[in-house]
Image 1 (cartoon, rainbow, N blue to C red):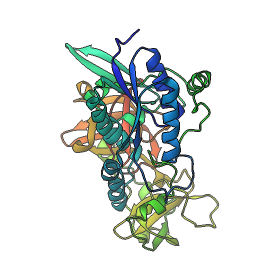
Image 2 (image 1 turned 45 degrees about the horizontal axis):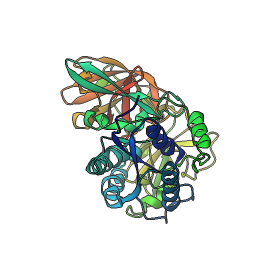
Image 3 (image 1 turned 30 degrees about the vertical axis):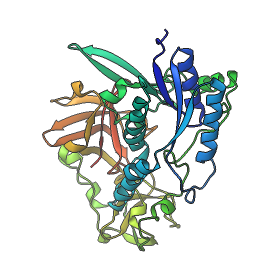
Image 4 (image 1 turned 180 degrees about the vertical axis):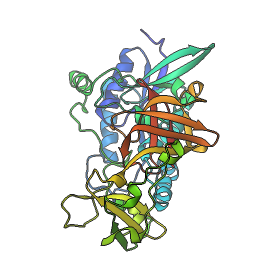
Length: 391
């Protein structure tokens, strides 16, 4: 179906997904404009050349030339630093685990970038995300739906879990109905320079980084103790009361609960579930971070990925941190959902328990490495309806 030449601004990242996004929209009859977002200048913390912005911007320009569409670069590095990088520093300093990719979509791509696109007269913005957009009429009002991508291996709906109805109304996801191999074939058939280009990895717009070096730009190195907690600790045998509040109770450790097995450079550089960077040997199975105490600068670890200290059945999200993509579906009673707490994690059955001050998300089966600061997202079938920052 033709679009009556509506204008759409595509976030051309220099990758194959956004390149094919621009091509597909052009084929559908849209007036397409390519815009490259320059959000990062400091190459000193990157550990690979997989995502240098100069190369990416050049590839984006070549794609725009090939397609014959207008192209320009916008520098959003100041907004990116204020909204993403500074937030990351604050969260890690508090001993929490932020997700910059989710924030980048909420704060940069679908806020700052969207406003720029509208100023350029755009009817829509489009990105190369593997997700789909739908809509339903509820009591005369259009409700936009954020649906999982057809390619289960690439579904990126989780990264968009903080979008709202106004943002979805102005957004298109052309490749959501395609698989990655199909996208690459289209790029190859159209002789786009990005056809065989590897997917970028690491922080959104930054690339692969050494996280400790990145954080050490603002967070001080402080030597602290690593305390190993035995799997047989008595607190694991005490079953919390079978209420959402009881199930969401976090394990609380002290140095007296285990033995010191090493030192670290700062508790704020580590996160729950982390295995790498501990530099402690002599155990049969690898050690994993169970908890961090930034106040006393202690890391608590346990041996093996099945350690009981890694597992929890529920989490809490304060009301101020709860977000509904579909506000019309906000429940007043417990609601059965499917949920995940990180990208690519398989969806798991869970129940939302709303309260006056927030909500509990209680899983049917215990989940590993639930960390404060992460985003939990919940679905009804293949539709992402809400999310929140884990407390």
